Length: 143
Length: 170
Image 1 (cartoon, rainbow over the protein chains, first blue to last red):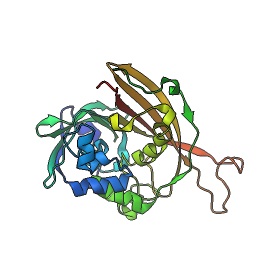
Image 2 (image 1 turned 30 degrees about the horizontal axis):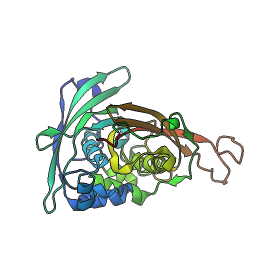
Image 3 (image 1 turned 90 degrees about the horizontal axis):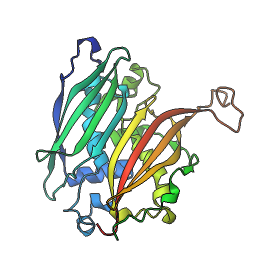
């Protein structure tokens, strides 16, 4: 899927899709992200701790979901360094069962095109069990 | 009691640049693998250089590693009264002036931007300004004519993060 070919901004229209993907999240994935990111908050790997602070169980790091979602934009842009601005709100947790897996669905459309600045804004839709888990998830891409 | 106990006196506080974080190739590869960022610019030095970068580039959210280390100076200060068992991450934003790449030595200045309270919830917003130290030239001298004891820095990324802290009645 990855390539180093950048989209031609002059051929894009607002509303164009950049594609979609499913992200499979299991406990091993969360442990791996914890180690890679240095975020060892036990709500992301310890059920009894998570329940003790009022959660239904272990939940994914919001930053994991945010990082996994933008990978779609990186591949579409052809150059991860073209993502110059990226933001999200964490609106719902992604509960990750054990055993089992959570499936997060990611898709993106072109929200804004700025030809003068040679930038586009990609608006991501990131859902789990049919509900959005990221709000205002927007990536600005320099093309 | 429904109000948050977060210490409002910390608003506006700035923490000076902390110890440098050295960005390594294997850390970039590890982080990219963890988030499923398979673009070869995170994994292949040849690809990254072919795109015009000096080395492997970091995924867009890699800077969270540096930001969370920096934010810990504030959040883990008992005087700040941020109860981590009552915290959820509310939002995050990365603005990149250039991609972080392997070989960067990053230092970060932390600012507590705001603490707003409503309905027993405290929204705590911090900003991390992440700078790359100038790389010494081949002769080992600091770049761009800065004094030897004040290496030049370049603003690379700004990370803004908001935590929501539940009050004790919630």
